[in-house]
Length: 127
Image 1 (cartoon, rainbow, N blue to C red):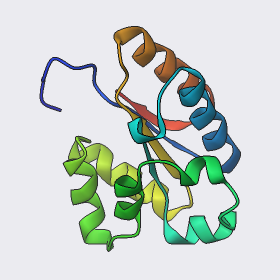
Image 2 (image 1 turned 45 degrees about the vertical axis):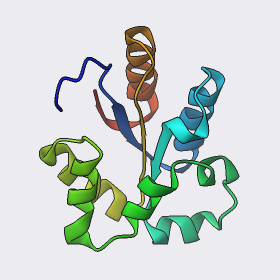
Image 3 (image 1 turned 135 degrees about the horizontal axis):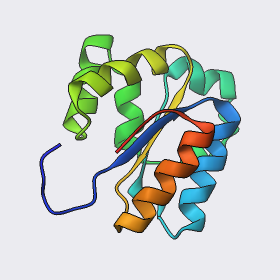
C-alpha cells in the first residue's frame, strides 16, 4: 500500500458467525457502515439467505466486487488498496464461502485493536 499518512487498512476473512461479531465490533467502536468494506460471493449471500442485515449494510461497492468475474476480483481488491498477493488469498477465501471485512482505522490504537481481535476469530488478517 502506498504511504499517504493514514493508518493502513485492516482486513480479514471470516466464516459466517465470526464476521457478524467482527462487524458489530467495528460499529461499537464508532465506525459507520460507510467506513466498513464487506465482500462475499453471491453464493455466500444466498446461503445466508439475506438474513444478516448487519452485513448487508456494508460498503456496497466492495460487496459488488465479490460478484465480479474471477479475473476482475483480484483487480477490484487491488484497487481497494490490498496488495496483489493478499488479494489472491482473499479471492480463494471468497470462493470457499468466507466473508471479507476491511476498515481503515481512525488511529493506530484502533488498528492494533482490530488486528488483535480479528486474529482470534478470523483468517488472513492483514494491516
